[in-house]
Image 1 (spheres, rainbow, N blue to C red):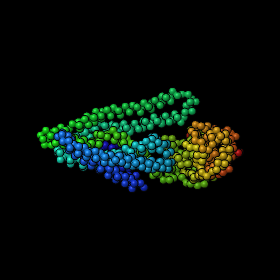
Image 2 (tube, helix red, strand yellow):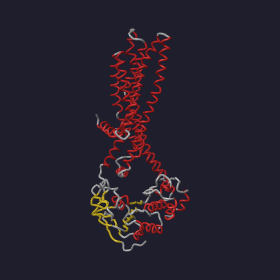
Image 3 (cartoon, helix red, strand yellow):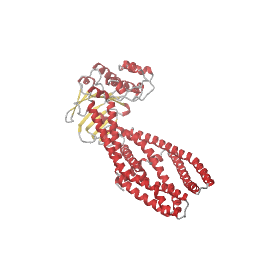
Image 4 (tube, rainbow, N blue to C red):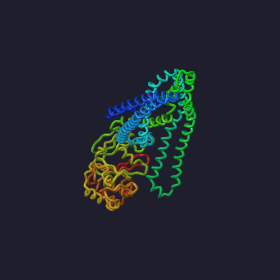
Length: 563
């Protein structure tokens, strides 16, 4: 077996079993058994109807009116029984698929949002479009893989029930159906094998195009200010072209595959009749047996021709399995890391911040950002300053455990007593109340308490403009950057952590407000660290780290600290 197919099966073996050994295993097993019962019932009814159909057509050919009507009633009775069985088979399949998707999605979401896996996966760049894998790929995998499992099971039942009947009619029919299916499956695999790689690439290229459109939406104001929509159109069309070019290759290969499979299916219509026709012409069988042979031959061939009939769907499923499997493996790799894993930087938890001879490199180790940094801070304020791109924020990433590569050792406060304010605060989807309480360990604030904080940070006019605490708006676009930074300080006042990190968190706030906010921070934070380059920030801090172009750092005190 080729390495790609082997890897697909290995990944399938990883992502399927957990559901069937989970807390839902008994429900899942029960529904699978019910599906098995339905499948056996449907195929048994099909076998019964092959005999009814045989006698029905024989009575018609012999012009026996009473027997014809009798077989017609039997046919209608079989239809009446089969209809609810088929409907509930499909209903049970959909319910099991929904249960599997819900369980799988919750498991992946939990793992994705633990251990900062979402950050490490996105920053590492090995896994493209994780959002698509979590939503679209899981939906496709759970429904399609279950369908193929039932197709395989149905095929086994058909072979067990129908091959014996076919053998009783003519051994030549059995030899012919197995040989025809074997040759057809081999040719289909050889012709259609490139579709697996093309479908895998298509999922990625479609996701890249969709991501570009989301990027335009999220940055619509900036694009409108610059007015260079032509470049955005060009970039969007480039990604669309890449996706459509690959889709064209898929269409062309599907055409090649269809040239064979269509002819393959046409021959099925007449092949069993050709084989049993001499028996009918010699008077050895009745006319109804000819139609029964065609019916059974088609069912047995369908059971043996899964590759031929469903190769396009199987190639798409293989691509989805590869994408989910690689995502699963990336999550496993992160989960195997120790809790305080730091990739060379030893980390301890304490009530102070200390760096001992710390060298920071980028996660892919292509650049050294900070060299041999040592300092200790047990209280007060620390300012990290330096040119743009010098690595100021990298110190914060190491301090908060986001970056894990380098050498040396650090001591840092626990993250549950720490709050980080970025330059562009995260605006959650939800109400204004949700925005204020994001990051807070308590949600039991009265409206009066929240309103007091809103007044403190200067957002009362904004509060009136947006319509109150229960308003749900596109906050990232409705609020200015300055308003968003003030909102971040409101979250800070509600949480009141002991350790605060401000990553250029006041760049859109006037100097008077900046001074006021730092005075608020000093009321409850015993230790705070600020990243910034504005000279005015010096007066709010006791210690400064100045980063030079080569990654060397100068640590010193600030003589004058004024609030």
